[in-house]
Image 1: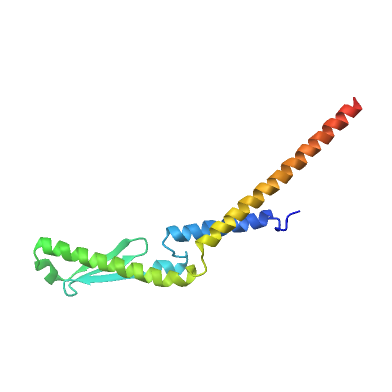
Image 2 (image 1 turned 90 degrees about the horizontal axis):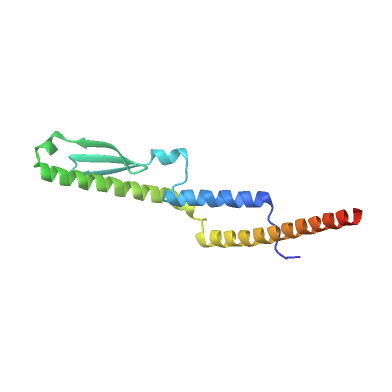
Length: 150
C-alpha cells in the first residue's frame, strides 16, 4: 500500500471548492467577496478641486461633480482634467482594494495550490486504477462462475 493517505470524496470536494474560491479571488484582483467590498470607493480630483470623481468596485464611476468654475475652462482642457480626475479615482480605488485584500490573500500560495492539485490528480488516478482493477477482477470471477455452472 501507499504511504500517502487516501483522498476521500469529501477531501476532493473541499480542495476543489478552495481552488475555485482562490481562482475567483484572483480574477477579482484578490478581493474577497463580502458586504464591505461594495462600500469601497476611490476618489480623485483635478483642476484645483473643481472636478471631483468617485469610482466604486468593478471600475464603475459613481459620480462626477463639476464646480461651475470648471465649466468656464476650454472644452479640451476640461476633458483632460476629467480624465485626470477619473484616473486618480481609479488609482485610489485600486490602492484601497489592494490594502483591504492584502490580509485575506496573505495565506494564498499559488505554488502550494498547484502542488496540491497535482497530488490530488495523482491520487485520483491511483484510486481509479485500483477501482478499475477491482471491477475487472469481479467481472472475471463472475465469468468463471458462469462457465463453471454451464
